[in-house]
Image 1 (cartoon, one colour):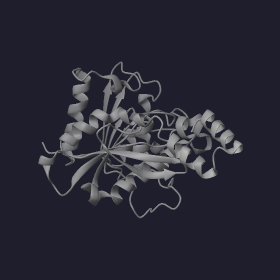
Image 2 (cartoon, rainbow, N blue to C red):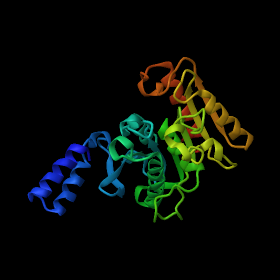
Image 3 (tube, helix red, strand yellow):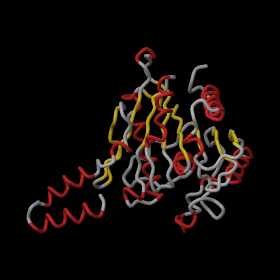
Image 4 (cartoon, rainbow, N blue to C red):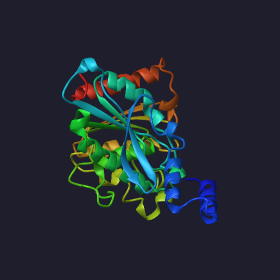
Length: 296
């Protein structure tokens, strides 16, 4: 809720026009503002988590009826925006493409600082909550709980990756018997390093080391594919080179595809008939087929 809304509600309460219970109702209604940026049209929308007044939603697309199976692999998407902003619309096209190919797709709305006055740690808590919610509801949603691929761009890439490699950072009282770890990762210019030389270390301050995925890699990290622009000055490509080198040294699978002259977030505005878009599409398809999430 923004400052003006809070001030208006406070004035109405003090003047007697609203009872305290009404404040809660109006606050919940205000949480639906900008909902068009937080859910996807045509999706099955559910609330996966409520934090105070904020209802966090997940937009779900299922495969066409002719692909009737008991359960499908899933793709879960985390938008980028520096943990400050962003929209589930970032991966709307991919939700439709992969649902048509036979995956249940889910776009996650999580807390960001401009909407919720939140921290990156709270964003990560939401990402882990979303992963657990999907597994908890896997049977109802016709999802194979051990076949969940996490997609993410920039800070969303950090959340997908951090859910896979960072322990802790769980929502208090959450059922941690359910795994928050994805089974594979598809990342676009992801934040893999949050210490000096990486992204966000000044904001994260004393938490920078604990939130830096590259510092916590170990054997058994899920197979990962990364698409990165060589001209990225927000997340230098040297960060993902370091990440992939360490992944390989631990015996983990990591594919890195570099794009000369491309800056941070280049994949967001690619024409669908462009060579780069088609190459990324082909590489993702090959990756998902390789690990059994799509059929050839």
